Image (cartoon, rainbow, N blue to C red; front, side, top):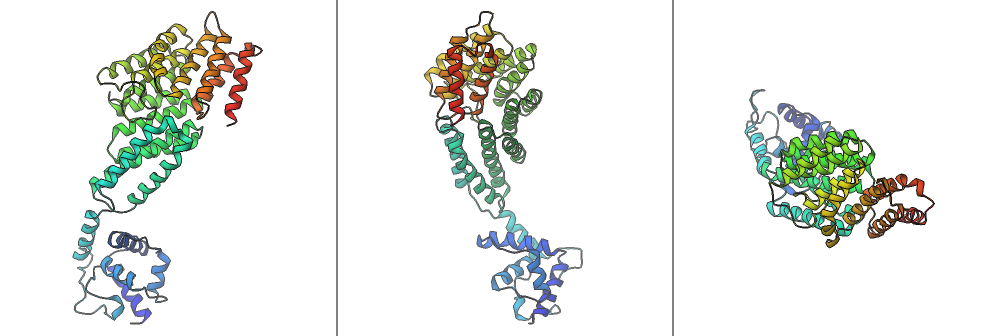
Length: 414
């Protein structure tokens, strides 16, 4: 068979199946993966060269073409003509070839993954959550990116629905983690992109809990960008997905209450804090201090700490102290350096906003806070330290305040 004869035969078969050249390429790439677990470098221009007789595909591509075009018993390279009585019949434009249907069924039931692989990814996510406050985002982000890319390669292959849904959930959690890490490293545009992706993957995975978690991180990002109205709105929208589930605690206290405090909404803060505690009472809270990046229920310590942060911004030092007294023993007994730092920063800011301000004592708390987390500085610690120095600017000549300023500069240079 000449190249021209081959090309004519190929074009007729492709058109009989109602395929464009690009659609044939897509089908061949998919078949190559499902049948041989190989990625092939094929594009529309190559199919065009085949059909014009410029090139004839090698045996590997001819085998793929036979399967893709429903002529499994015929070799395109051995001179089978379009009029051969043994050629597969195509019933006009009414139906597909039975072999086309069989090929599609094969794609639906084949899988490039299995339950064990998906479980390994899920366990890796649990390990990342556990290590997060010890290792920090700068250390762990590359590991998470690598796993996210690996899962994406799997998603670009073929799986039955139950495997694909699980892969969407794994991919969504990895993107969610990357979004949170990006906020902590001050990469806000990156955080927004990952969080949006996590939210969409949560929809594909039919996981409103993941969607709620993603909304919480979007709110977290907006808060540190300074868009407090958007932060509050995102936290409230997330609670629609959480439906009074565990994620609603984080959204109400970390997202809604803190953002509304920046807007001076005392009633809104009181309502959000009370709602967070009311929802938490329905569940068994984790002991001690839960990881700040956990996909599970917020610990009571985190809820109280968030409440303290909100009341700092409302200028209500008595309420700050009330929640700080609840949480300080728990934080001090934990290994959560960030939590210990943030609580000190809240207390320091409350001290300089009190009726009888204590700038020296407050500045010493800021120095303690920065020193505690100096090895792994994150956006929230740095931002609140800057806010304190802004609030305490009238005492900038006091030695402890000057020392706090220098300590912050040293940490920022790391």
